[in-house]
Image 1 (cartoon, rainbow, N blue to C red):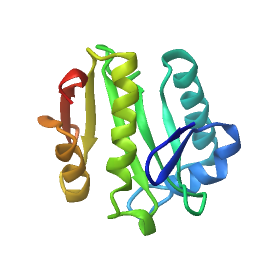
Image 2 (image 1 turned 120 degrees about the vertical axis):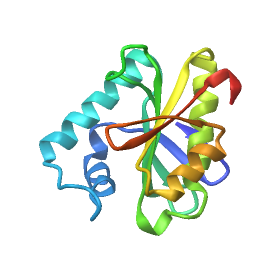
Image 3 (image 1 turned 90 degrees about the vertical axis):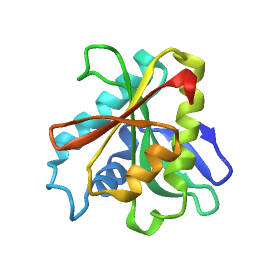
Image 4 (image 1 turned 90 degrees about the horizontal axis):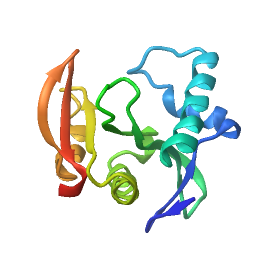
Length: 158
């Protein structure tokens, strides 16, 4: 468990299935079968066990309410072992700086584990808020691939 000024960050595990599914369900995303949510949680548990970091269930410390998911994890899709930054928050929690606060905690944790790593965030080009978070953290646009913009930076430079 990790704490920031306003958040409690808990590694996502099997008991978080309902919150995970709710936070991943949004009008801008295709519907995801519950089996895929379960597989996502299992993969997250493996990230924590194998790499020491993964995604958190993000709770508002004041109300202890789950408001988002996110963090950093080693990318299994990329052959170079880069780390991926991810953040997704409930609509009512957006625009309050929670994603950046959570991301900074993830970056601080990653600096302790793999300071020489590259951190990447994949952002849809039309998502101005996500672009602002990525650039506000110090990531720089590196490439556009498969309909997303990829922002990168060495962890040691953040």
